Image (cartoon, rainbow, N blue to C red; front, side, top):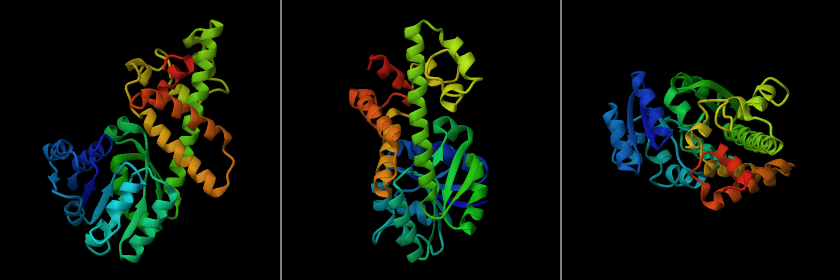
Length: 296
């Protein structure tokens, strides 16, 4: 049984922490939202009064935060987690942030005598609840080996992507593919509608032909063909358009810093920017089809 501190008990963090509890681990958690923290207590966890207290309670500390700014603020400084935790604590940051910040914090952890993995996830709230997330992990081999059994409690696919920051690199590249492909699939359905082609017919053909992709076969943006997709729930979010825009912007920032050519990634970021700017940030990202139809 591991002693785990968990900071960030939002829509993703809380079910991840619950899965650790179900596996018999001792979890002490903190969230700025007191109701989320109480929910961890109701599930059998310990509720800390601060992020620092949660970190001090664990030999391993997991964080799930909104952006690189919050990660830097939480980890660095005289009262940051790296300074207050016990020596040799293994930190696992599952936030999705920029590669530069991930590597800066990893360097600071090493300097402080701590250990750090960046381990962003894919799979959305449903994957967090079911324990089927994909973890993309950056960091030292030994730290990855130690963390893997815990990650396997929360996820189904665990991949060591390389050194510090490589988990974040993998995540933003993956989600750039996802954002582009969802727009492509949505455009195809909009065109099919204009041409009088039935949704199901297009799905039956493309799902078994060269147009097959996850955005079509698992997360189809029109109701009917995939009953579990958000399109059947009026695009209630599993992964919001605002979060997709955040990841696409991270990819574009990285492309700018590395002089990488990502023209479709740039167009996807612009398209989601317009969708979110129209007040649709809380809608599932597959709801981009509404924008393409001109309904947003």
